[in-house]
Amino acid sequence: MENFSEKIQSLRNEYSDLDLTSEDLNQDPITQFTKWLDEAIETQIYEPNAMVLATVDENAPRSRYVLFKNIVNNNLIFHTHYESPKAVEIFANPNVSGIFYWAEIHRQVRFQGIARKADSQISDEYFKTRPRGGQLSALASAQSNIISSREDVTNKIDELEKEYEGKEIPRPDFWGGFAIEVNYWEFWQGRRNRTHDRFCYKPEENSWKIERMSP
Ligand SMILES: Cc1cc2nc3c(=O)[nH]c(=O)nc-3n(C[C@H](O)[C@H](O)[C@H](O)COP(=O)(O)O)c2cc1C
Image (tube, rainbow, N blue to C red):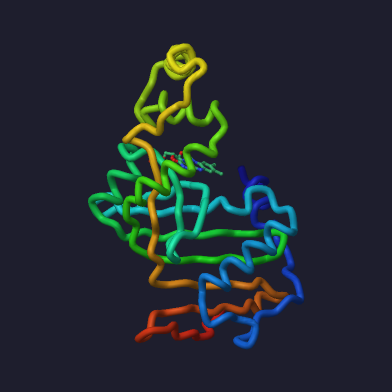
């Protein structure tokens, strides 16, 4: 274990010479976010749309990855099971926080916001684009329930496959999107010698106040 601790402690990467100045930033954080996400996509980062989403369970925070899937009316959309722990937590307390990290380009985007159930049209449209296998597993999985074996789910998928053979699979009511209205953004550009550039956006009247933060 001692060796392993040393191994972890010796992990040390230098970041790039890329910098981020207030002139680089778009006044609109959604435009800034989409620019960075697009650059992450173009860099061919694996799953650049994966984000950690934190929710609050009574007083304790919980987090997990979800896939960011769209921007609608300036809200960030992800999809999930509406009876999953994360959804139950959001319905009880809509305050969420999320984070993207694109290691290859030394960038992090963090946000806080309010999550609400997305319009059913958004969920329907996205569900239709999912491969059939993904549609069936959404129907078959009572997400995060304890099960005795994987077959509990694969058998259910087999049954549903027969039931829906040759038919369109409808989106179940218990599965769909959440829309996050972001009220705080933070952009981090990693730099050499830990002199990282950081900027936050806070709402101010009808626009956003942008401020530099200490790394
Ligand atoms: C990269 C990645 C992407 C994921 N995307 C989603 C997603 O979009 N929706 C989802 O419900 N779960 C997704 N998951 C699974 C969740 O992390 C989590 O295990 C599951 O949703 C149950 O979370 P909960 O018990 O907090 O509700 C993803 C996992 C990984 C590793």
